[in-house]
Length: 198
Image 1 (spheres, one colour):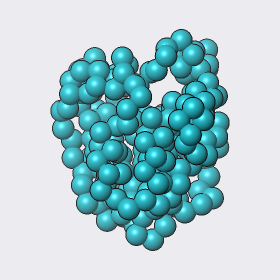
Image 2 (cartoon, one colour):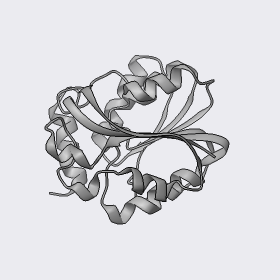
Image 3 (tube, helix red, strand yellow):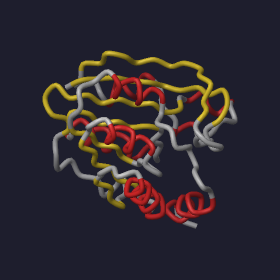
């Protein structure tokens, strides 16, 4: 089974995978920032996209699961919210526009793709724009609250410093949090968070 088939099945078999509420770290940033253009890669069922759009952000998003994209667009229609959401993989993503904010929320991938993906995020930022990241750090292998079980797909401070060294990093930390984002992100978790600006 391919990765997209796995995610299509997971999104199809569950009413919601990561809940309907936005990620808290993302929400805190959105709530204190003047709206502008926003890119959300690998956005799943659209919980962050819809939250931002309701607050005036112009949202572009993509995910390689067509099921997740369809669910997000259906929810947006039902809630009278406008988002631009395309089925697209990380490999197919190219930095064609500039954004005020790029938010990578629990985007984990094969290490061979990481540097290129992160450079594409940087290239998608307008001058003065922000990139924010929340993901699992390498200690997450000790926990059972979600995420990949392969350490190489998890993040470290050194990796993010290496990948985003061209930006001004305002926050970069690892911490243990109580994750409560649907049934697949639940419990004590080891995460990494970053805020950086171009």
